[in-house]
Structures are given as C-alpha cells and as structure tokens.
Image 1 (cartoon, rainbow, N blue to C red):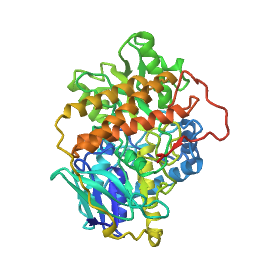
Image 2: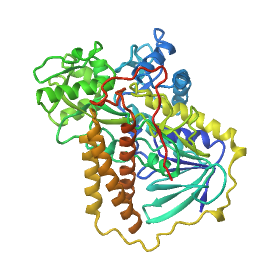
Image 3: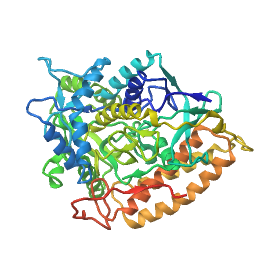
Image 4: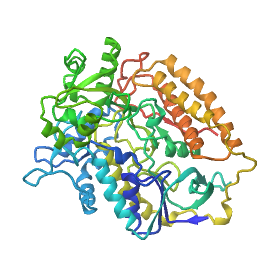
Length: 530
C-alpha cells in the first residue's frame, strides 16, 4: 500500500500543471504508463490560445469558440476559461516556457481555423514539446512529487466496490508496475485523471500510440458519468505518406496562407464554406472526405508553395524537415494530406473545477468533458483548457479537504490474480486491436449511418465479451490493458452516436443530416448500468 495526498495519472500539460500546484499542499504521485515525456501534449504543434492583441478581445474568442462548438458549448465555462488564459500563460512562462516573439518583443500570434483573430501563442511548430519539456523539468526538481514511469493504472478503487455505504467515492487505484510485473495498490482521497484522448481507437490517427482511452474507460467502469463521446474530431490534414502515417500538418500552415487544393490544382473549400481553408475543422474534414470520395483520389493537398524555403524552415522547422525526409519540399510541392482521428471532444463529465460525478475523482484535459468544446473543438483551445482546469481542480480539492473519505488501509484489499495464467497468444490481442480500429474507421468515422452504427455496436459487444474473458483468465500485461480500454472506449463512442438523432458539429449522419432547432441542445450522457 502506497499512500499520497494526490494521485495524478498522466504527464501532459494537465497532469504536470496540477502536480506542480498540488506539491505546495502535500505529497504527489504522478503515474505514467510509459516514459514521462510520452504524452499527447508533447505532440501538439500549433499552440495555445490567448487574447494578446489589442485588436482582439475575450468576447471575440468566446464567440469563435461558441460558433465552432455548434450550439453545445457551456457558455459560462467558455467565458471562464478564455478569461483565465493570460494568468495561465504567465504561470507557464514562470516555469521557463518560451513562446515566439516579434522583433518588438510582443508575442508572435498565429491563426487557425475558426478563429477570426490571431491569438495562437506558439513555439515554432513544436509548442507541445516546449511546454512538456519545461513542465517536466520543474516537476522533476520538486521534492514533493514522485514520478512513477511504466506504471499502468488498471482500475479505480471506490467505496461502492468496497461495500461502503454512502455516495460513491474514489479512494485509490490499482497499477501495474511493468518493470516487475506486480500489481501495486495506491491510496488517496484525490485522484486526478489526465490521461489524454483515444485517437488509437481509429485506424488512422494523428495521436501517439499511448492514446487508448485509458482514463475514460477506468472512470466509466467506476461509475462516473461520460458525455458527448460521439464528437470525435478528425484533423483535416494528416500527412498522406506510407512511411509516416500519423504525422500532423498543423492547421497553422493554413493560418499562414496554405490553401487546400485537389489533384487538379484547384481550390475546393470555398464550395463548402465561405471561410475557405480556415473553416472550423468539422467542416473542413467533411469537405475533404467529400472531395476524396467524389474524385476517387487518395488525398488532397495543402499548397503553401507561395512561401519561401527560408520562411517555411523558420516558421515550421519540424514540418519542413519531416516533409523533406520523405521527398516533399513544401516550398515547391503541395503537401498530400488526409483526415485522421485527432481529438475527443467528449469524455468524463466534469464541472468547471474538473469534478466528476464521483467524490474524490477529477478529470482534466482531453479525458474530460467540461463543456468548453461542445460539438467541435476550436483549434488550440485544448492546451489552454488543460492548464486552466488543472489550477481550478487543485483549488477545489484543497477547499474540500475536510470532507475527505476516511477509508482505512485495512479495508482496501490487495490485488490477487487467482488462477490466471501468463498470456500465451498475444496474436489474439493484436488481432482484436486491429479489428476494433478498422471497424471504427469504416463504420464510425467522419460520415455515419444508423446501419453502420448498429453493425459496429453488435460487433463491439461481442469483442467486449471476448476481451473480458481474456482479461479474467490471463495475467495482466500492458497490451491486454490497452485492448480492454480500447474496446470500452469504442463502445462509448458508438453508444453515444446512436443516441444523437441529428447532425451536429463532428457528428454527421446521413440518416439525420439536419441539426435540430433547439434553444437548449442536450448533452449525451451515459453511465454504466449495474
């Protein structure tokens, strides 16, 4: 039994930001299933939103966010997060994080789809890596924080599971220590899920391999409310190349003048939206999907050849270098791109302070559904949300410290594997993993139908049973845990999609192509039925 004041799962901007603040109030354990630098944050290219230009305003940022969210954003949440941005940026810079500046010392501001003003702070085209590296360095230097790498969180421990009466509360979690193969028990009254998203549930994604919906699946199994998982954002421009199938061509490229064209060299976005190549992502992704299906071509292109090599190598050094490595010179060649799964706008339902429906459990970042993104995320709002909500979650946890659950260590049982055997056929896991990802891409991607969703639901139900049998009969390993979470997350996406009989934002279905006229559109909220 290991006991900490705060348990944080994940080492992205949300987890590290929370840990740094929490360390001033107690002991903190930060768990990550791989190495500390492996996070969705580290992969972020574009930047982080903040009103920093005299011609911009909080009201404009709020309006753009609400417009992108297709009527499903929580307006008060949007306002709070947008207005908290300057303070969040100041705190980042206090940790040594650098954002690019103009010659006059002002922030260099980028522009992305859905934004009416330049308000994206960035560090070249590797903003996430800059944020991740500096926050991680600060965490590693903090004596009150213990980082536990290669520790895969398996399941939350709740009072309901322990047979304790009263409101269901989280009191710890079980974790696989991959270095020893042992299952460890962690005790805490404050558990914070910062596990990122679930992009790997799809065959094609811009996400790293770690994005398997772990925190979402854990919270759902524990009884937490999950909301709006039908809204999976497909980034319009993933590099189309057989050697690099998940490399992102940042929306910032279009923000600096890149235009979407077909193989014939003609621009096509203005036929779909007057904002052209800088329309919100749901519109652009559907337009590209339409063009690919209409022409039979495997991809479309981002054309930024009107910019010089010097400019591109300075503004987008990582993208430029990576394209050159596969024989594409963006200064001379349009960049081939296709849509790919990128960001989950739904997640574990929380309030503005990151509180879930379970006492003691917080969710921050992509794993959570705060109401900021609605039915479609506005570009570069995600890093901002993670930084702001991390601080608010810590404040809430501190203010409620007198209401913590007094569960003694003796009540929490140690993990037992019973008669479970070592996994003898990993090929079964890999086969099921591949089947889930192909199924989701074919039936539950950019354009959906009732028939496809029904087929997906039926097959996923069978797969869940297969995986569950495998889980109980064999000893735990990371591949099995990821498969278990992957099939759970896929089912949540399909189940939510089946409940929304309209097209809104990222959820587009041919059976209900119109958006319902409603002054108060409803979230799709589901919970495990026991």
